[in-house]
Image (tube, rainbow, N blue to C red):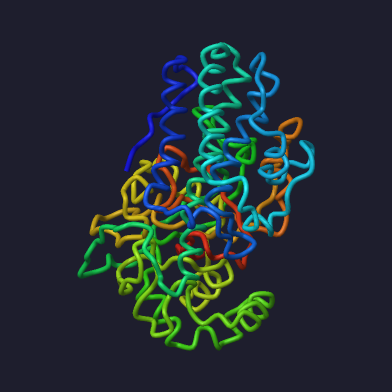
Length: 422
């Protein structure tokens, strides 16, 4: 797969323009194996069609940058602002999220033309306004926003294909064989007064600020992610039938939805659906596509708990941003290697924490409509850390706060255990 070049505030206009081209091209590369019919399907309310992702990320640049910052700019189509706005209420009304799959028009061809139109004018804007710090900051935000939608594009099309009786493969994918799983060991975390949150280095979202002090009790965090084999043992031990393991809302959810295994596992517990089609479950690979409810129940069954986000961030701080990311090409969680120390810290699966998604002390959202990006979702969701096999390595850092509702599991979400030492 293609890669993207890094960009910092010290880079010049040529580097920013190349960064823009790389990110936008990578999005299109992800659609290379799709047929036209694949671009328009919405398999559940949380999933958006591929076509919508391509248009929405272009609308973001058009709405927040081209309109008002590029002299003489003419929008591509007035109706696109209504069709491809996501949740920015201050911008205007929007098409219902649950009905995005009904948009057979505009066509896929028109959406690709829209992207070309936006790209042409964005490169002109970069050339003209590269010295304007506010404009550059918005461009970098837009590129990171697009990288988020690259991951959503993959997780959404995986769900779409899983609903098809043909069980089509997104593309041919490599696999990793392993004959053993590294021993599960717990590594002591930092304790006492510590700081978490974004530093001033590089890009970060407003929800990672302000940097602040936390107090950590003695604890330890597992050296690797929970494997398919370990989760299989939980199922075989009646994990989904034992109410003492589950939170009240979790027990109600699994009863109502009749959950008995991770999202893409077959009823035999021997195969799973992947972006490479149906494959035999690798017992050494990390379990994936489990909800917070399932992660929490497993942790309780295993005699541990999930880490808090502060524990996770301080534990991962200083670790290199390396692992199984989208550019690795696996598009699936793979087994940990046999190295000592902290394994699978980044990539493979997003890791559920036991922390509710809430504002840091002193948090203030950005002004205007762009402030709706993160702040207004700080209710009823849980924080995840670390990135996944569908995340680009240039998009992740220790302070990154992802968030989903506790019952969500169509993302590449997994489990890392923690425990108290007191």
